[in-house]
Amino acid sequence: MARTFLSYAKINLYLAVRGLRPDGYHEIDTAMQTVSLADRMIFESTPDGGLEIECDAPGVPSGPANLAGRALKLLQRRLRVGAGMRLRVVKTIPVQAGLGGGSSNAACALGAANSIWGLGLDAGALEALAAEIGSDVPFFIRGGTQRCRGRGELLEPLAPLPDSLWAILRPPWGLATADVYRGFTSGLIYDEVCTNMALGQIAKQDLAGVVRTRFDDLESAAQRVRPEAAEVRSFLVSSGLSGVTLAGSGSAWIGFCPGLEVGERVRAEAAARGWLAFLVRPVRGGWLETVK
Image 1 (cartoon, rainbow, N blue to C red):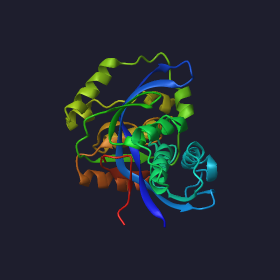
Image 2: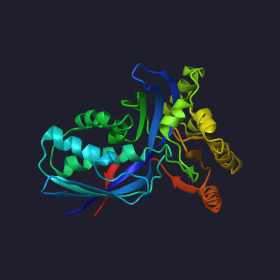
Image 3: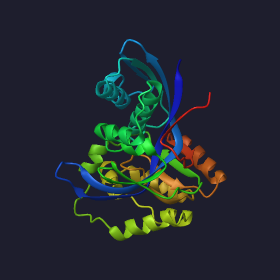
Image 4: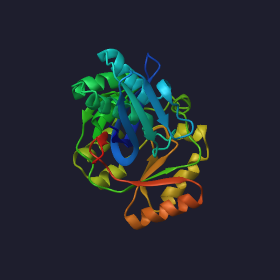
């Protein structure tokens, strides 16, 4: 019997890049929040041990190259699972947008297969496996509001973000994470003061303060890689949104909506420009089985 799960996107409430690590990754300090924008993932266990991955989005790999496929293969190998899985991914989260869609799919695959195959793994065990797949994947096992450090895999729960409306705008081109990090200027100094200010507002659950203290250290790098990114930011600011920042490494941008009327206007005007726009709210988890 097929079972359907939602795999949520994320936004960054702030993103500080602390510099290059000896392993070649960048050390980051960020607060991530899952939001209501989600892919649908339909799982069906099979008896033959095979993995069949189907995705409806162009450019997203099918089969074991898919991050969700890698997650399922890792579970099979580590726990000697004899069953297989048929998975269909219905994408809504745009790719190369900085919204964590691939990592979210991988975490959802771990959690869903753990349930479907009856493996009995707890959250800690799932997070350890998730860290082997990608830096952001452990975050999506927990979801909600988390401070993420190291490569992104070191998690610390934060006070939940109050209910609020956010606009996500994705232009008709993507940004590869590796390209943006390569364009990051190491002379930019990690500002602990800005980070502590952002964390303080999150701790107080002061929505206005969270919006006011948002920042993303990768914005300049993204605009050097793709100068048109500045146009997207300017559009959101001029449309009346506040706390406008890049979504992770881009290419999407995020802004706080003062009301639904403003959000609907932004969505309509963005569509007229050929841009994708979504209105989202915070959610508490990283993935969720849909109600039958």
